[in-house]
Length: 356
Length: 233
Image (tube, each protein chain N blue to C red):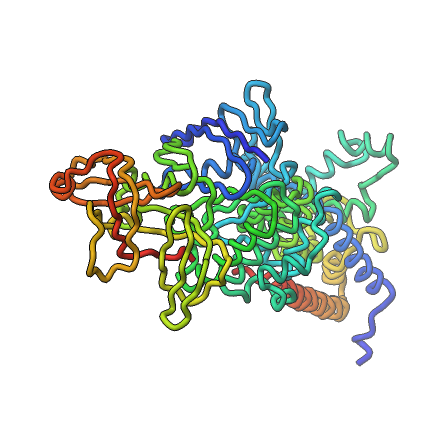
């Protein structure tokens, strides 16, 4: 599936001007509040009309303002999960789930009701009314309702934003399973680095109604600190395979392209593919292999780039095999170490977080 | 307790009143829903004129409404002569005319009640239905209509009660013919106009109170049932 978006829309004083192409998997529309993410996903859903532009899914034209083509929302067969659930209060959970099935084309009907109900853990809620559900339960039912309509594309507009942290933690695993177990591509709106790092394959970075960057999750989140004020979260996102688990020390060894990382963890299984987040401020750079350090992870690599941010800090990209590790150090440190491109260095990784 | 015994004429008036009110309520309901929806959601030229027209029977003296109905829907009226000639529908001095007068008098009350509930419907739920594949007509039937049901029930009860009590417009438009257009209210009025009619007037008054009270209880009960289903968060 390919979704090609090229739309312009003016809403009051706000101008949305977005252009990107998305492939399979999860595409995150990522950016601060007010950057136009929701306006854009509404245009994709057909809930609002762009003043100019085009929207294509594979070869089918959904919007083409020049030829006055506009396929209305109910004929697009996209699922939409709203921030606030929007369950129908006059229907039971089961009826809410079945709602989209009445209108789905026969070919798109999902046969396995039970599988999705189990996937979302909503089997016990079927005969209840939406008014009696908790926030997290409502959101899971809303996701199920969108899925049962047999969508070609699933749109999710900050589905976790209205929930507190424990509820988020409750739903995120379901979203991951959804990504891994169904073939439906997903467009996911979020302003949370953690959610994007964990779920997305591709990121469309938005700011002030415009697309600032499009790339893989690792690329975009690595460059994130220069685009956002939220520097704490910037860092490398890597994916690897769990090799061994040390139950005594509660550590897992994760194999990446050319090296291994030891990560503190409680519950992962050997052989599972996981994502790791290495915050750039938690990486030190050394020109010789350091000894007598508490850090478990010391990775050898070569300097791929050195960028100064003009505020006394420098970001060093260190290439280790096919992966890039980022380090944020002071300009003074960079000078003292006399870092040069392609020189061998050691990245001392203080913390690695398993994205969950 | 002999004086409580209802005569045949009185029974006829009661039956006629119930029938006329029920017909007035039922026939005006689709128009009421449509008008309420247009006024709540529509954006069109002349919306305030439509709003004014709908409310006119509420403001005008009922006799004036009755007279206007006579002018328009009477046998020689513009619309009345057309309906008579081409569709064979006659309003003047028939029970159908009584139902028309009652329906028109109750219409503003019905529209107001339904309009308020349409305005209270969360537009976001209708959007959600659209993303699930429901076209405009299905959205209306499966989401909007169930959500405005309490307003519709309240509007129907109001229109029914108004029709039961309607007197001025009816008597002006279709007169007071026993068995054809003499409703409960008109029958009570007739009793008060003849010497010794007080007992009859009292009997019918008790019946009117009973009917009104039953209608009120029925509406409360239906609102309770619907409210239990439509638990709005």
